[in-house]
Amino acid sequence: MSKTPQAIRGTQDIFGPDAEAFAFVVETFERVRKLYRFRRVEMPVFEKTEVFSRAIGETTDVVSKEMYSFDDRGGESLTLRPEFTAGIARAYLSNGWQQHAPLKVATHGPLFRYERPQKGRYRQFHQIDAEILGAAEPQADVELLAMADQIIRELGIEGVTLHLNTLGDGDSREAWRGALVEHFRAVKDELSEDSQERLEKNPLRILDSKDPRDRRFVADAPKIDAYLSDDARAFFDAVTAGLDAAGVKWTRAESLVRGLDYYRHTAFEFIPDEGSEAAGKLGSQSTILGGGRYDGLMESLGGAPTPAVGWAAGIERLAMIVGDKTPRQQTAAVVIESAEDQITNIAMMYVRAMRHNGVPVLVYRTGSVKKRFDKALKDDPAIMFVFKNPRTEGEAARIDVRVAAHKTGELNKGLEARPATLSQNLFLVDRSIWGNAIRKGSELSLFSKQ
RNA sequence: GCGAUCGUAGCUCAGUUGGUUAGAGCGCCGGUUUGUGGUACCGGAGGUCGCGGGUUCGAACCCCGUCGAUCGCCCCA
Image (tube, rainbow, N blue to C red):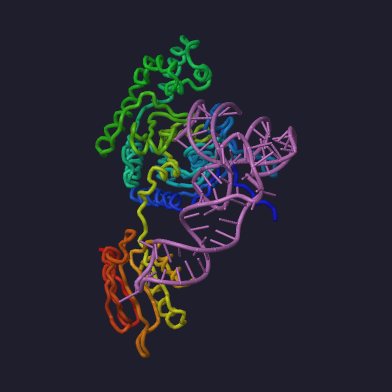
């Protein structure tokens, strides 16, 4: 026997409650994006490396050391996608989706980054993603954010706030960046080692440094507001006004910047409030959804200037917060106590009728009779049907219907047994699940939940 | 890339200063009892102690390496 191979570092096999929470996030996303009429797109999992290196920026850490890249047999460098946006921008340009502009699209799936795994962060991770392409108006930002807000709300996540900032247009951003470099260069020797590095590479990042040595100088650093052009300011005002009108709560975060080069104007993150339940579940990983406007991206890929705005959110992180709030599926248990084929066939007829009427059913027919009940009860069904042999000659196969108690120990006292036989034409099941179940002739028809 | 902690049964963990055949609970399988049965009791299967070296008469335990996990830093979502 050879050894079982290990899974790749930073990958995960998701099962059980985690998998249910994961699916709940995706299902909620799919349902809500349809309400906003975002169109589903499916994207390749890998692209030519240049798609990401040009779009994201050569100097960023993502490109310089966090990409999963490899050469194909023709010697071309390919990369497993570290994000959705660059690939969607490439598709927009190469498929002529300009004709659909403004185009609202949504997708979800696996992404890859070669990083050290830690809480809520994996080498293969999964995101939901929404983009509006070819829309320059601030109303696009508002709609996109309203959808994000609704998704988080419908996932039942509390205590999360939208942190909002503007990076201005290209000129504003450059002017501000210059002023920041000047400001921090004057005190360079007193900054943390990391921030001295950042000064050259990514000065905006100094703003959200956690190091106390840096915090002192961050407070009086130049603010973007002083460098905003009139247009940029008007744009931001329109976004915030729109959010207010849409009932989306937000807070200004002047030092919120995004790591990637292509962002302009609006930048935002949904962050759990200090001390909230969600914050506690996430460890040092705090942002649960982030994005912004990337008006410069299309040009970096050789396309015409195209305004666009989008966001992405990690499914694992959302699932972690949702946790056991995932609605549990109510199930009917059918226990076949009899060993006779005829009775099994009758039971399976009922099972089929229930499933075709949208009722989830689990069947127990193997192992000792005791085991069948043990297993059925452990699955905590909302109701149980028992098929057993007739007691007397000529009597029809006997069905017991009972409402199983939901809590341990209440089975015997709390349970309401309603024995019925096939000769009777009506029996009740737990109304909270399916309403009345009525047998007519050989068919079981069920009324849906009210 | 850096730091800290940790790898013993399917799962959660014990395992005393290094000392015979490595334990428990849960789970799993079989059985007895309980009126339709989630309980209780009896029995059973299941571990080359992550892997590879080293020290020692002797290593789950000490040392080195390696792989992996967890948490944090950098970065980012």
